[in-house]
Length: 214
Ligand code: PCA
Image 1 (cartoon, helix red, strand yellow):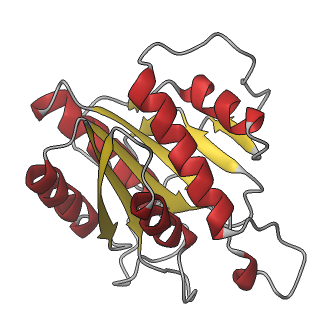
Image 2 (cartoon, protein in one colour):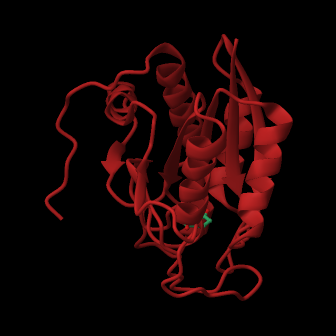
């Protein structure tokens, strides 16, 4: 049994759902065989989200942690490659805090790479008929904050844990006015299960095209 912690977020920016939490809950309900999946719902708050993550890691003692967040406007399941040491909020968090150009961890390294086989995950999703890509940046809002905080926690306190972050599109009910891409939560959950299966079965990544020109 591989112990996995999956996290999603509460809604933010006036939305009433966050597909990350909906998909995480669904994926955990029907976890792939051989995996024991625990979940935690994180607040969309700078600081508090990391305390909640630390608590969940301590409580569940996972071997793998995958945090998941909503990326409104993103057309596919984006497996993140890198977390950066910057909080630069374009909009306030759910408590009205809007840090500008502050470090996530003062004195921490500029960035951490995900320790998941990012390209193998993307390839597996695409082979299963799900839209997916490698993302070179998780932004500078609460998701990147959590991703960086996770990788820092792993680097400093839990070196055997593997970790990463996945951004997911809006759910269809969030885009009824049209003009913005969405993906049903059931497909996002299928994608998360696919990622879990890859992560449980391989540590080495594959060599495949997945870069970006900008
Ligand atoms: N998405 C936000 C924070 C919470 C979420 O689900 C982000 O991309 O930073």
